[in-house]
Length: 585
Image (cartoon, rainbow, N blue to C red; front, side):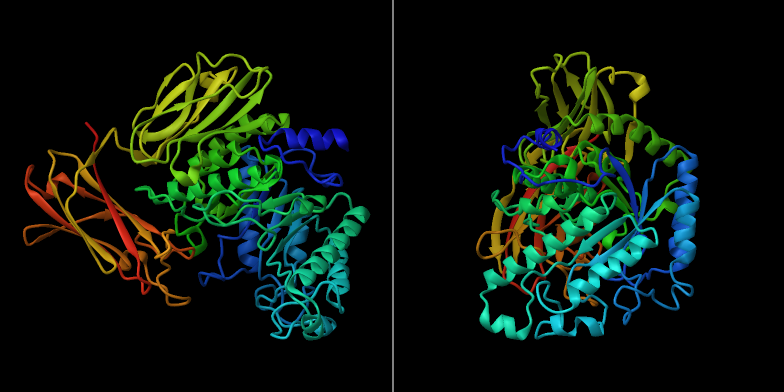
């Protein structure tokens, strides 16, 4: 076991020791490919419900993709499969007329290991089961884990599903402050948290001891700062690695880093969170970035497949062994499936070698960064430029045993700006990512093409703003129109304390599209000019920025354009505006 821990810890540059008892499932000895059907439906931010028909449709898609070379090991049934009054032991009707029988049988038929979502101890669309009554908190919204009947009943439930073939449990919505009214009146908050966490860890350890082949995933409630602007701090309790195979780093969300390509900012968020968890001492193999996620639902920001290839490649670049693919597999064509199979064929051996290293700056601070995956005969580097300017990114030699980085090959990049690889450096355009192969990976056999739906401008330069004037929740400025190209406007929104402020467009279920909150008004005299944006969507996680572009077809070179950027957020905010000239000669 000691040798395994040394190997796991060696993948992370952070020098934080793991708990001595940290261990993983017998099934988690190599990288896994997990399908999770959340984002094919969404019952929290959208109105698309989970049903047997939807679940089996996605299983048929798994079979189709497998026939084209894609690997899937597990199929996880996410939230709200359960009957409201069944204590996680019965399935919701009429959505599941015969319970899970057909789904479980189909998983067995196709060699898929089934998994189930469970809330740790928070009631989410679930009534308290009679056996849980003496564990409920005063508000009847969560259960104490160290008193009453809830935890024993939950463990019995897990055993029942294990006996039916479930081999993965995803635990979400942990609330370790929950206590019965009597205990809440006598124990401190800190003591309640300690007792809940201890009881839960001991229970999971005992379950794992009986079933060493079960995979356990930890999601919301198990630590980790979900923002991208705060300085690093130790906020992940590494003791959870004693019982969980993976810790999730946060749902896909736009970072507090503006991007014309909305979904590139979502990429930056996942990359930033992986880096933060690694800095907390979590081995890269055991960080679940909750990506890739695609679908025509609110949880996926209705992206469908926009930018999906870059999202997949960045997830593999992270070095995780818990590779979870979320969403609607019907969106992938046969050609997409063959591409995904090639990516898996490239990365799974690299991940199994256990040599992945982050490098460069901090994604959430708009600093160029990347990840390097090494094997004995070569390396695959993934580099990202999150800023609004062309950047030269150094590709460092991350291990002394590594061969010099020369004669590399760009394997993949966003369309538009053509990355310039020179030795151990690559020049990237604004918001651009690229994958670079060295050694045996620097061949045409490893080429992965371009991402045609994210287009990077070939030229970008700052534009001076004149007459900048602050107004309540607004800012005004003027700019002299350049010749040709486009004017890119970048707006950032801050709270009174100087921190990024995320507008959400109101509370559920009446949230509005954020183009109704964060607005650009650009005029030539009395004429309003069209502004191209990508934040014209509801963003459940909120957004602290907006980016828009105005085309040269709307102005005469040299004329003065007036700009008003505003926020309809009810909270007083400060807005900061930048402008750039972008072009594609």
